[in-house]
Amino acid sequence: MSSIDKKFGLEKSKNPDPTTLSNYVNFTVKNTDLNLHVCFQEQVVEGVVVFELVARQDTEEAILDTSFLNIHEVSVVNSQNELVKVKYHVGERRDPLGSPLKIKYSATRDTSFKLRIAFSTTEKCTALQFMSKESTDGKIAPYMFSQCQANHARSLFPCFDTPAVKSTYNMTVKSPYPVLMSGRHVGSEEGVYRFYQPVPIPSYLVAIASGNLTSARIGVRSHIYCEPEKIDACQYEFENDMERFLEAIEAIVFRYQWDQYDVLVLPSSFPYGGMENPNITFATPTIISGDRENIDVIAHELAHSWSGNLVTNYSWEHFWLNEGWTVYLERRIQDYLHGEPTRQFSAIIGWSDLENSISSMGESAEKYSTLVQDLSDGSDPDDSFSTVPYEKGFNLLYLIEKVVGGKESFDPFIPYYFGKFKHQSLDTYEFIDTLYDFFKDKKEKLDSIDWDTWLYKPGMPPVNPKFDTTLADQCYDLANRWYHAVVNGRKDFGNHFFPNDVKEFTSSQSVVFLETMLSYDQRREFKWFYHPEALNALSNIYSDYSVTLNAEVLSRWLILHVTGHNESYYDKLGDWLGTVGRMKFVRRGYLALQKADKEKAVFYFKKFENFYHPICRQLVKKDLNLS
Ligand code: BES
Ligand code: ZN
Image 1: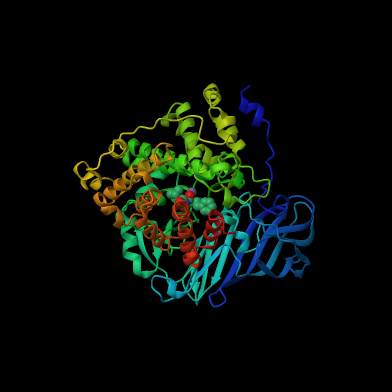
Image 2 (image 1 turned 135 degrees about the vertical axis):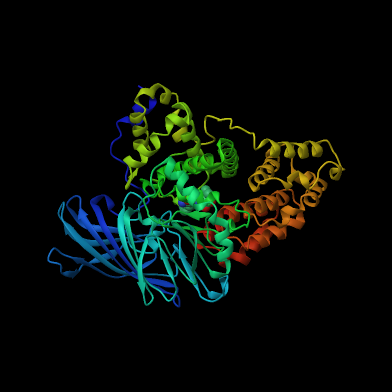
């Protein structure tokens, strides 16, 4: 028997999701009606939600998740179709899980009933960001948008806020400005917008945005939405690749199940690169760089239409099933369109991100760098968010691909897996059972994987895959030449390095070059701040990097100089941090600035605090020890 048999083979019932206070296991949700009214003046959303429930067992109460919500009324529609008010009680708040809404209602097993709750959000809502019209691009109308993953849906509406529960949705929104939600648009009249989501989705995929929005076509089944000022730039960025991505991934998995795939480009405070809200991916404006070089974010969010949205992690402890699979599929799209070396190159960037991420975790690496997470101590899934589920997850899938005999052998498993679990949520053990089941004849091969280490041990993966470095070598070579010039005490950098060194680099190659330069600083005997003249020369020779519109490149460029205590870059980085809200850049930026000049980091954070999304603000506060 392999270690996996002993450990997981017999595990049939799933551990309940520890990040919900609801009693979701008692119910099946047949459908959810969500009616919202966006009140820009008060910066709140008022709403009524109606759940169609079936009791899976005899139950005395229904407990839902809420967080900083006002509950106005709870009623039940009984079998005679009468609306009856019922007693409820909002329990004490338990951070970060919120307050349970306990509703007295006895239901016997297999009976169905409707639960109706009237509520409103409050200024403490963590799912929504409201923006005044002055802080938008066009300055014509105010703007609001949501971000519910991981567990912020409960601050938008009362719900079973766990990825284990899925429901179809009817969504209706009243707003003075155009509205987008994560469903199919089925009509609008006089400021009321209606959407239908026929594919069952978990609460974290409910999304809303409203503001002065316009649209343009970017593919046969795709539109781009944004404020009118940037519609042409956004259309240009996406129109070449959108349908090609869809065709590629349909060839790898199976037909796209959601009908339309649209993208909304948000204001700059959007805290993520992208968010895979069904039918309408939300994206950061930092990908609009004019060079179509950040479009991989869209390949990633599109891939979530299978991994995450159709087939969902049962709880955030198994988040790698969402993100690891998505990174795997994203790279298969790259392979399909540009060939295997491109996939390998992207995997190299991922590996170096993973190294950085784990080494910057310090002591918390013990807890947060395992693939399967333990959140049973009430920890906040936002705190456990890192590159680990993405890249360790990708590397595990890549290893499985290798072990079963390469892409051709692995490929049939992809549609099988997504077909088997579509409309469901699964955990790591069901994934592994399914894998062993599918590859019965390759059991010994699969047994060669050290599952225990992969799933439960902190740190880098136990296998270093040695990716093909064809596309990366030029970047390594250049960085290596700099390193040797510096340690050999050269002063005449201008005679050895030229702007042309990096002119032909793609932005990803520039990222690899700059990351390699940054990685030298991890060596005990080498620190960039011992070599100010080298950094000055670098700054002069590759001055184009200072004006690049590509945030992936610019962020690394600024961080490299700040890490090397090149003081003229402190304010450059500080000011830039006031223009991007994407957490990946913001957090790393403040950490680098803090290391060089703690006071400056705090100064800039205080200056821009109100620009950031509430989730981002909270995490940077923790990073800077301000909370
Ligand atoms: N689903 C994530 C974003 C997310 C994760 C939001 C966890 C809240 C909690 C999204 O698909 C994502 O991974 N975005 C990446 C994009 C990248 C990997 C291409 C990001 O935001 O950087
Ligand atoms: Zn993702």
